[in-house]
Length: 137
Image 1 (cartoon, rainbow, N blue to C red):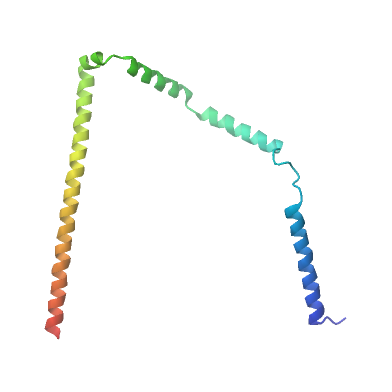
Image 2: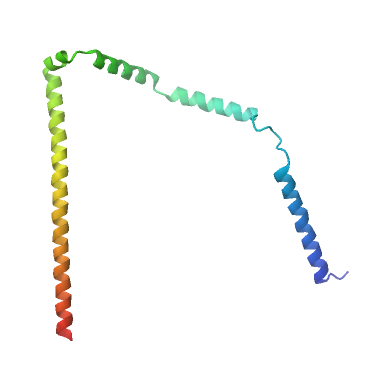
């Protein structure tokens, strides 16, 4: 049996049409499960994941932190001022914060000076290149 180009083209085209119809049927056919329904195994997996996540939460630590926050809110400020360790810690914290802001300002100033020096070096280099170019011509 001899197969011509025309016959081969018809076979390929009919095969493509068949595949296109199968794809369209797959796109427009109703899904096997309803959109609101989930697979029971998927539901079990989700519930197990939630249980594992809840088990990993540091519940005791969270409770203790809340208690500490409530205790800190309940203490009068005068009591805090009487305790020298707390005032020293607050003073130290304030000094560190001031030092950080001063360091930030000094850092900005140093960066600006570095940038200006770099610009001056680039200008001097450009002048040197222009000088060399004018001497060469």
